[in-house]
Figure 1 (cartoon, rainbow, N blue to C red):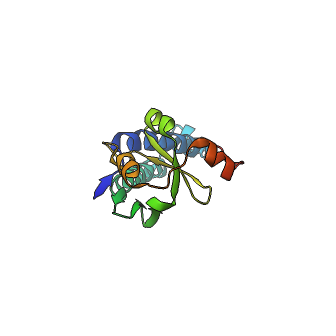
Figure 2 (tube, one colour):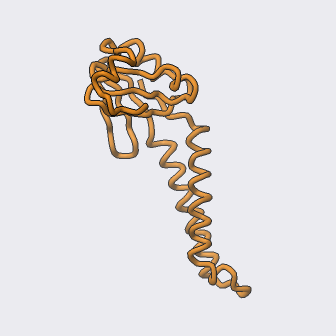
Length: 149
């Protein structure tokens, strides 16, 4: 089952990052943009920035999704696919996951992963249903004492 990442959260994050890059562009070419006699170059830079921003937003909305398979969860980010086998997930932080709407889990190698929810939170439900090797927090800290969640 293919599940897109929550569009609202993606758009809000993208707008924040885009504003930061716009400010960096403005500051890096401050003399160019403060010149009272604007030429085609200034408008071209702004137009190019807007076109690239819209293109990146469309790509981030269409190329980021999850696929729930019977034995693993596939996270597709652009061209990259990440596979998380349910048997490799040993801990799910339920409190943080419900509070932040971000699936927070630890793999059997001690890596902490954060996956933003899809619109309905089905990846969380799938992990709860299909992850059978879950341990409690004390056991997790015994196995991986340096881990920070």
